[in-house]
Length: 74
Image 1 (cartoon, rainbow, N blue to C red):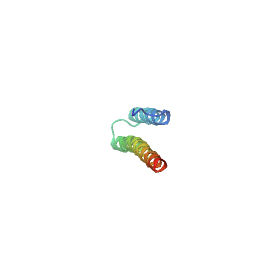
Image 2 (tube, one colour):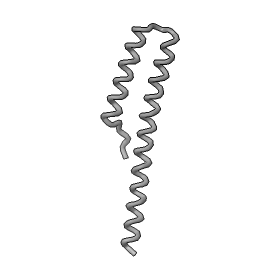
Image 3 (spheres, helix red, strand yellow):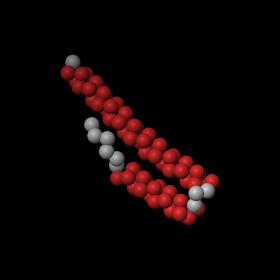
Image 4 (cartoon, helix red, strand yellow):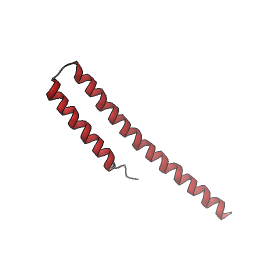
């Protein structure tokens, strides 16, 4: 099973990274940069959680399909 990022995940990563870079140039290396970094990390964590949920969902669906096959075969 391939773990490829979806289009929506790529868009979120790109927009967040662009906004982070703009914030670096607009705010400079100040305390506000830590807040921007936190936002970036939250976005990345949400994307990772989304990928894990998709993988787990597929495993559950496969298990349900296997149970259905076992029941119909009996």
